Length: 341
Image (cartoon, rainbow, N blue to C red; front, side, top):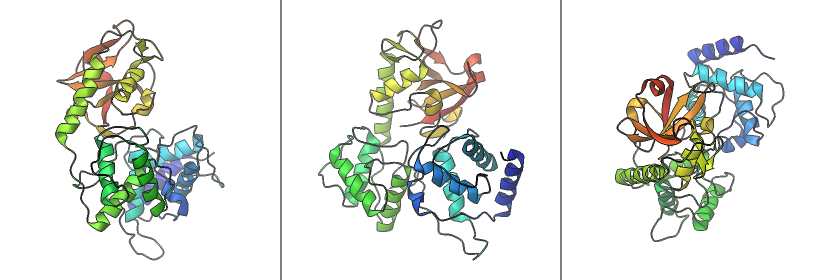
């Protein structure tokens, strides 16, 4: 077992001195395709452990494909050193911080600054894909349309008009692109695939049409309309259908009806999309509350505007209801919003 205080101190000292060095792993291309957390077994975990060892944060001699206690504590130490939310989950934000550091680090051996990474997939730069979720077969939404525009512009998708549906034609085009970039050709658009597309688009000077804000507002309105259909539906712990919802069962069901797949549990929904503050909430954002009946993210709802949100509250409160986000109880437990549209 390693000394967490020593590791945190070492990480901070290295970050301040700017002498962090990283290994270059040929398998790194798969890292970032999914969120990694405790209990998972995947080859990406081993790649992550190798990178953490480069920081002096992973103490085991041998790396494995299992995300256990040591990996979780190592990720927490890295998050602490970078001023990130300390949750031990290797999510999009943690991945991007790792990549940003990797890109700007000066090697202590050759003193040559590494080249910058591809444009941030969560940046607001015009003409680039913006990553909010993993896209796969049968997904729907304006982000699918943008992905199709990118694949069409790069010559991998041959269609007259792009749509908001991820069908087999999109899947095959995506596989062809992934293979051309030496990514795993699984037909699923994860974070690394988005980054590769943006890099190739930038290299060819191709700018995508901007996503219509009115289209995003329309999607939010549809989600809110769907949610309101279930006002008064009873609260059932573990419930995921109109026969009865719990909080995350309600949000995942409502978003699913609008072509967006969310993680089932609140702690998973607390990591999707982009983190936003209370003052920046927009209609359709998820709102995350913590330490209600257990430590950490423990309640979730959908912001509908005007300081109100819809959620499956509790049996005593009447199931699916609309509440004031500024009431004393919810003000005390509010953590942040998550934008997935």
